[in-house]
Length: 265
Image 1: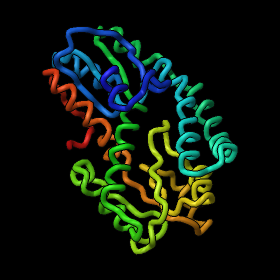
Image 2 (image 1 turned 120 degrees about the vertical axis):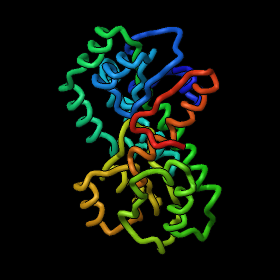
Image 3 (image 1 turned 60 degrees about the vertical axis):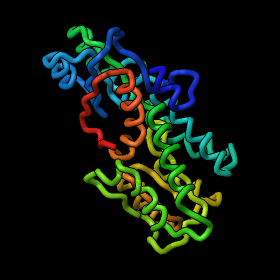
């Protein structure tokens, strides 16, 4: 966890990440984007010392997941959105997330890990922040004032995770020949901002917005507004961009890591 926080530049563990079962003498790790009960059992059978999941799987990381959604406010204000408008744009979905998390069976997988006596943790927001910075820097390095939307896609496609992914980056609003203009990557705040946050970005000068995923309903609503360009990079490939740097750091410590569902770099 400390390595992930350092990579992200975080001083504290965010609400969507936690160590469920502590361990020591870790030499062999099973790392999955969604590592739950089945993966814990597999790890136990094959002699792994610990299991890491990217997405939250229980405990406080589930119950308090909605709190990290406020990170959108910081990202939006940095992009020029007035704070009061950013707060308003996050309110509805944050309430929905809190309601959803309150229904979750938050100790099921944690109890499973405890029964198997296998160290278990999840690291979510720190690695998404690492990925957001890598993708943002790639766009900055490879684009200019006259950049088209297609040029932004081409820049991202230079990252190995997107080259190796089965999914392809898609332009869901606009066309590749549209001017990209002010471009923002919205990622690393729990989950995507949906319709309200995208609409607010477009309202305050962002011409091209990048999400890693979006629901069909939100996309339909945005399409009806006829504003902005929206690039969708793909959930698993995008998560992998932030996960792989941690795996490389673990390898430097002579820790063997087996990926499950993570696109290799």
